Length: 227
Ligand code: CA
Image (cartoon, rainbow, N blue to C red; front, top):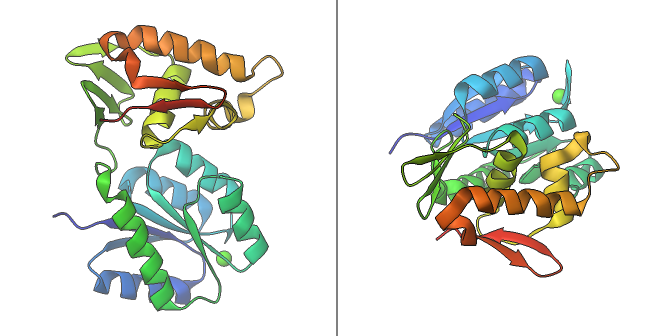
């Protein structure tokens, strides 16, 4: 099995050394970045399975970074922060982080969180591989969707919608949550939950024989039948 890749984005050199040493000892491949800019660059080239992100970084707002990384990949995100309230906000507000550890942290605690996150992501294909459900394949890297051998041409929002549902792994997603994830900042007053319904309708039409995979959960939202 290939070793899992971890990207550490942290500006405090002693912490980076400590993490690198301990994670490598566990068999992970570890890369580090010292600021947000470099962090994002490495994130895009390395395609890590997990990112350990310090929220207080030079040249970037950790929260923005978190949101950007989440929108681009399914890598697990573990936040490092000195402020507990901030951590609750990041995970609670669903900026995309999966878990957090507050500083000062114990290495043992952190390793346990890392392992749990990697294990949880074990069911998903490695980052960069297409996700499959039935005869549908969704390739997040190439931005391509096929049903059987037939390519399906989706708008960027339709693609993001399908990807969002796929990443929920069969769980129901509320329409509000879909709006927030897919439309985010572009959201204007004309965009509301009906927009989600319209996009789902279009997506179903384009998925043809697989249209029934997108299930309406009455008065809540939608889910994707993944198997
Ligand atoms: Ca820092």
